[in-house]
Length: 638
Ligand SMILES: Cc1cc2nc3c(=O)[nH]c(=O)nc-3n(C[C@H](O)[C@H](O)[C@H](O)COP(=O)(O)OP(=O)(O)OC[C@H]3O[C@@H](n4cnc5c(N)ncnc54)[C@H](O)[C@@H]3O)c2cc1C
Ligand SMILES: *[C@@H]1O[C@H](CO)[C@@H](O)[C@H](O)[C@H]1NC(C)=O
Ligand SMILES: *[C@@H]1O[C@H](CO)[C@@H](O)[C@H](O)[C@H]1NC(C)=O
Ligand SMILES: *[C@@H]1O[C@H](CO)[C@@H](O)[C@H](O)[C@H]1NC(C)=O
Ligand SMILES: *[C@@H]1O[C@H](CO)[C@@H](O)[C@H](O)[C@H]1NC(C)=O
Ligand SMILES: *[C@@H]1O[C@H](CO)[C@@H](O)[C@H](O)[C@H]1NC(C)=O
Ligand SMILES: *[C@@H]1O[C@H](CO)[C@@H](O)[C@H](O)[C@H]1NC(C)=O
Ligand SMILES: *[C@@H]1O[C@H](CO)[C@@H](O)[C@H](O)[C@H]1NC(C)=O
Ligand SMILES: *[C@@H]1O[C@H](CO)[C@@H](O)[C@H](O)[C@H]1NC(C)=O
Ligand SMILES: *[C@@H]1O[C@H](CO)[C@@H](O)[C@H](O)[C@H]1NC(C)=O
Ligand SMILES: *[C@@H]1O[C@H](CO)[C@@H](O)[C@H](O)[C@H]1NC(C)=O
Ligand SMILES: *[C@@H]1O[C@H](CO)[C@@H](O)[C@H](O)[C@H]1NC(C)=O
Ligand SMILES: *[C@@H]1O[C@H](CO)[C@@H](O)[C@H](O)[C@H]1NC(C)=O
Image 1: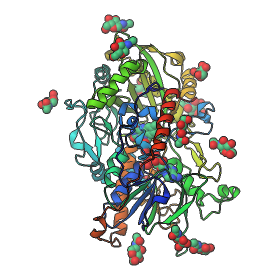
Image 2 (image 1 turned 180 degrees about the horizontal axis):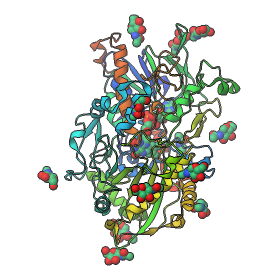
Image 3 (image 1 turned 30 degrees about the vertical axis):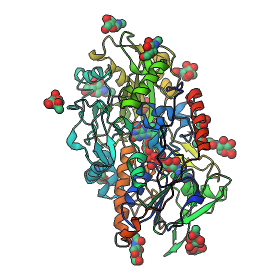
Image 4 (image 1 turned 180 degrees about the vertical axis):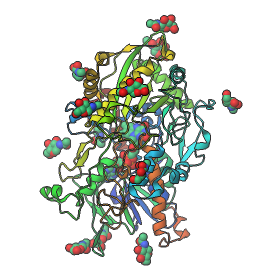
């Protein structure tokens, strides 16, 4: 659990622009583009499309407002949003690779989507990851080289909150300096920093130092870059949506669920889907709107396939028994689902050393002081994300698993696994002890061969779909998790950790033999919330996949997908950056498609007709009450 005791003010104040909270408040307007979801994909593509004056853009978001919600702003408090009103609170189907456990499967139920609750780690992925995308889609525009302008365009490298000298911690020339999304290095030093970096010098052959893992070659251990701006979370909301709300051609409707996309006609026998149906709750009222140009699904890798299936785009074999009329029979919708399996393993540490994160979790007075410090100066531990260092590593090429399995990774610049180093006890599987000081080793299988599915459970858009990420369901993935744990232990045995790391703690202490480590891993592994690939793009002439390389839905007109479900393969990275870069390119592809058709009418953007509409004070009060209650009682599931 993460700071569940915090009984502190949660709202800093409100500043709301052209934001609607009920469908009945929407202005009478023709929207060129209707974007479903305001997360990394939706926020970025919608904001970029609204740069064209005269093009009207509407974003429809199921989740709630985050303006002034302090835990969405304080980087360190991000994890406290799990299991709160800002979380869809999904659970997986029983996972065969996890001893049949069902696990909590958080997604952001918020303006900004998962980027308003996530952990802000900013990693682009590897050159091979994107070159593989280009390869399988037959579109060289998805290659690492071709995407470079977009990686820079999205990004604004800023100084860390403590303004320390970052020489040697990243390569400035690789980064953008004027994009909407702020990126920075950790802004508060930890006693473990020199130990982790020192260990890369102790064991350079196996654990090399990587000065900037966003260069295209991810391999090695180095400093974590975060989407943090002057000590505050930078999200799809703060970076893309909030600035665009100043434009008269950009509207956002929150608290509203899109229930399906609607066929509005046929073009040369191909169904056109320019309609959306939406409602504030399962009891309605139900509304519909048609986009004049396109509907763009950006509901994320869990719900984009759900909406497609509810709309009759999917496997007729699965849809028919549910009584859904199949309009586009595509058995690939909801398949090829990929995620990363994450495990946290704790070590006790020498108690004479300061271990910041445990001290915060165990001492409410200290935590309160840190919040005050953050509020007054945006400094201190609360500007941090969950780790100051992490790394990406490969199995040796003679690893025995390669006798049986071809390497599922994209190539030599992609890791098979990730190690994340956290200065304290942090687990998503077991509660934190109330005393003691710890160091957590996270192991993450980042080039999985496991595949899962998203299927409908019921025909109600207000019911969760069946989410099966297939975590650790392949021999390769459990082998990799086991070897990652062994490698992590070797790394923590480096001289730099002498006198600090004491011994494995809890169930981890009994995981010694290979069989024991595997049993331990199956028992405690969860997810790092990287669902992707459930509506994958493939080559235009391929019968596999769901999308064309320009992200249009195969077999339709007027419908695109711009979110993590479009990935053909999960990147060996934390995927927010790959989703943003996909959305940045998508916006240019869409603009080019309509360039000759756009109404260039500057007069349409001079007035500001949209009424400001806030969350009513009644629901604010309810929200604060319920968030406080969950913050105080929340215990991680299973
Ligand atoms: C707890 C957590 C921690 C994470 N940590 C990191 C990290 O440190 N670094 C990183 O790179 N990535 C991280 N991620 C992953 C990252 O957030 C996602 O990869 C990214 O946000 C995906 O973007 P998206 O646009 O596909 O989906 P999302 O950002 O999830 O956005 C989808 C949006 O669609 C909305 N929506 C869904 N259904 C409907 C509907 N029917 N009608 C209307 N709206 C709908 C949702 O409410 C949501 O706002 C984390 C995720 C979580 C949950
Ligand atoms: C998620 O669970 C919490 C705790 O039970 C609850 O308060 C919140 O409303 C749930 N989220 C949604 C979107 O229903
Ligand atoms: C791309 O495809 C070619 C031909 O199939 C193959 O030789 C090459 O290894 C592929 N590259 C990647 C990065 O997948
Ligand atoms: C930062 O540190 C480097 C290397 O130690 C040094 O060369 C550089 O001058 C420093 N920059 C500033 C602004 O102090
Ligand atoms: C959307 O278009 C369809 C087909 O032209 C039409 O029947 C329907 O009335 C339109 N819906 C709205 C809300 O305009
Ligand atoms: C599209 O065409 C099919 C036949 O090809 C027809 O049954 C259907 O009604 C048409 N749909 C619309 C919305 O025009
Ligand atoms: C808790 O934190 C406060 C404020 O920093 C400090 O004065 C106090 O000694 C701490 N208590 C314990 C038990 O460490
Ligand atoms: C792989 O090669 C290394 C060094 O070349 C050797 O030490 C190791 O035993 C080999 N491992 C296997 C599984 O063959
Ligand atoms: C490879 O397959 C053989 C035969 O099925 C099996 O005995 C062995 O354990 C497998 N190796 C790995 C690393 O899974
Ligand atoms: C699927 O639907 C059934 C029947 O409504 C319900 O009991 C079950 O909990 C649902 N499963 C999931 C995973 O939501
Ligand atoms: C704990 O740290 C102290 C101070 O650095 C050192 O003297 C002591 O040997 C360490 N204890 C262990 C068990 O490593
Ligand atoms: C699995 O977890 C349960 C419950 O936390 C525990 O009792 C059991 O010892 C664990 N088994 C292993 C192999 O770690
Ligand atoms: C642009 O307009 C032309 C002429 O009206 C039309 O044929 C074409 O399909 C339009 N392009 C798109 C992408 O809608």
